[in-house]
Amino acid sequence: MDQFLKSYCWDNLDSTYVASLLAGDGATINAQLARLANRGDWLALHALLRSLNREALIGDLPVLVSYWHGKLALATDSPQTARRWLAFAVAESPDHVQAWIDLALADRLAGEWLSAAESLRCALRLHPNNVQVRVELARVSLATGDAPLAL
Image (cartoon, rainbow, N blue to C red; front, side, top):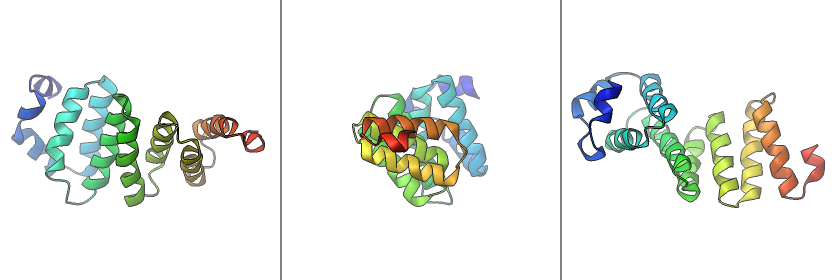
C-alpha cells in the first residue's frame, strides 16, 4: 500500500484506498498517517490529509486530521500554520499529550515562548513523569527568564 501512495500525486489519491482507511477505526488511520510521517513522505501525508478533510465530520477524525496537519506543518517549517491546527486539536482533545508537546514546539518556533511554556505545563499535568516535557519546559523557562521553574 505504501508504494501505491507514492505513485499518486496529491490531487489523485485513490478514493478506494481512502474509503478502505475510513472503514477502519481512528487507530488504523492514525497508524497510516504516522507511517507516512516517520518515512518523511510529506507529499503522501498531505494527499491523505486532503482526502480525509472531506470526511472529517465524523467521529474522532476532526482531531486526528487537525493533529496530523499540525505535524505536517511543523515538518515543513510552517510553525504559524502548525499552531492553528494543533490549537484546534488540543481544544477538542485536551488529553492528547503529544498534541500539547507539538503545540509547544510550534509556539517556540514561532517565538511565542509564553504560549510554549503554557502548552508544556498542560502536557506535564497530563504526564508528570515525561522527561521530554520536563527538559523542554526547563529550556523554555530559561528563555523566558523564569530560572526557578527551569530548575
